[in-house]
Length: 502
Image (cartoon, rainbow, N blue to C red; front, side, top):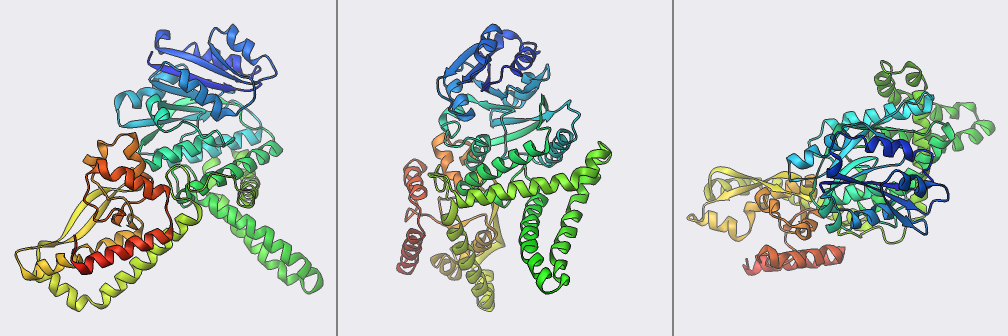
C-alpha cells in the first residue's frame, strides 16, 4: 500500500459524503491507497456514513480533537505516505497523484502542502479565498516552506512516527505546530499549489471573527515554543503583523483620546485618526490584488482586514495572558524567555566583540596579512537552524609562519564569525555546525540538533568528540538550557583559551 488518506471527523455527516465520493474517484489506482475516517465521538451519523461508503472507520469514544484523531489513524495506517484532508473538503480527481508527486520524486522531502479553492458566493467566503491566495503567492516564491496545514497535505509516515506526530495538547492549529517542529529539525517541506481541495470557508462575519480569534490564541501558544517564527515564516504576510499592531494602537489611542477630547480638546483625536489612515494604506496592496479577481471583495477588504487584525490581536493577547502549560521550551527548542535571553546575549557580546575588532584593526589587519594564506578569507557553507544553509567566513592562517601560529593560538582566525552571530546564523554557544554532506546523513534523532542555532563554541568542551558521542550531550544541553549554563560554558572556553588548550 503506497498511500493512506486520513480524515478526522466530528459531526461531519453533512459534508463527509462528498469528500469520500471525491476520494473514491481518484486517478490513483484504488489498490494503491486506503481511506481512513476517524470518528471523533460524533453525535450524528458520521460513523454510519463512513461505513456505508466502505472505508476503514476508527472511533474515539470521547472527543480528543483532530490531532489525536490523526495520530490514531497514522498508527494504524498501511501506507508509506500519509495524505490528510478534512471532512468539509472535496479533493480534485488527481489530488493524491499531484500531492504525493514531490515525495515520490525526492526522498529528501518530508511533507507537501496543497491549496484551497471554493465555490461559495458569500462575500466573506470569497474574501477568505483571496486571503489564502495572497498567502499562496508568498509560498510559491520559496524553495522550502515551514508551514503545512492538513486540509491538503502529505507526510512520510516514518517522519510522523519518528517525531511524535501531532501534539494532542493543541486543539487548534496543531498542524502549524507540527510543521514548525519539523522545519526546526531540518526536514524539507514544499508547496504544491495544484493539489487543490474545494472547501466550505467561513461565510459569515461573526464566524470569521471567531475563527481568527481562536487561531490567534493557539498560534500564540505555538509561538511560545517557536518564538523565532514570530519574526518570519513562509506563510504569514509581514504586513499582517503590522496591521495587528496598528489595530492595537488604534484601540489604545481611541481609549485615551476620546475622554481626553471630551474634557479638554477634540484635537486629541488626531492620534487614532492618523493610525486609522495608516491602517487603511496598508490594506491597499491587498485590495489592488483582489480587484481583478473580485471587485466587491476588493472594496470590502479594508473592513475585513481590520476584522482579521482585531480578532488575531485579541487572540494573541489572550494567549499571552493565559499560557498553555508545557508549551515553551518543549520539543527540543528554546522557547519564550530562554530564546530572548540567548539572542540578547549573542547580539550584545558579538556586537561588543566586533566593535573591539574595529578599534584594534590597525593591529589585527597587519597580523592577518602577515600570518594568513591567500586569499585571506575562507568561506564554507554550513547548515544552521532548521536546516538552512549559511556561509561561515574565517581568516586563513599559515601555520608555517609565527604570526599564523599566533593567530591560531588565540583563535583570532574565528573573529569574522562574530558577524554570523550578530546576524543570527550562529549562536555563541550551541551544537557544532556541520556541512550539508554531514547533515544529509542525519537520522531523525540527530535532526533534533537543528532545532537550535549551531554555536561558535561547543557546549561540550573541548568539542572534539565524534557525532555519535556529541549528539546525546548536545540534546541534553538543549533540553536543560539556561543562560547561567551558557555563561559557565563561555567562562570555561575563555579559561581554556588562556591555558592554551584546544
